[in-house]
Length: 276
Image (cartoon, rainbow, N blue to C red; front, side):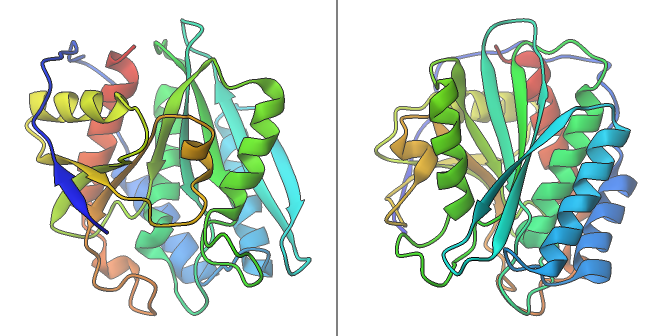
């Protein structure tokens, strides 16, 4: 993967004070449940179904209505993506996403239990508060490699975007994917070089104002199909990295850094409440 570094643009956002306090202990409980009580959860597996039920219960407890998108995997297994929506004060909307599945034999504490846990916590934080943009919370069911799918990864993204095209895409301001946010030495926001994108600019500026060491990186396409980008949506990946235990049995909760999780939570909370 080829990286290009860019300077921070001349853009500013009002930093909000007295925002709800993120609950790291709850994030940790979620990661522990996913990685230890459930464990490896390949797309379409019984364990993946258990995670779907867990997330559904949590979203319902927070007071959200939610919907399922059901689809068949190439090997004919059933798979499911969860969608919940929180309305903003404007007509603009954004997608926040994380994936529930893992590769076989991987507990998936960081990839992507950490992203799922942070996404659930962000859903809790915004509930009952005014936010500038509507938020689609998407828990994707099949983002790792799938046998029989020639396009590589992101099968559930492809299914979701085809569904969303029927509803229209013009109102969507972009997609932020929370992926592997608990391990690594570099805090980075990635975007593809072929997509026009100001989400990266805004995240970097908010991070800079908060004195968080977020690096902006533009990368070459690394999969045949990049569903959100191919649909013309500004898309970024927010992550810490590299993770030496990625896709291995060592991707366990004891590797997760509280400081890194909290940096993502505080950045995303500030972004959600501050940026139009």
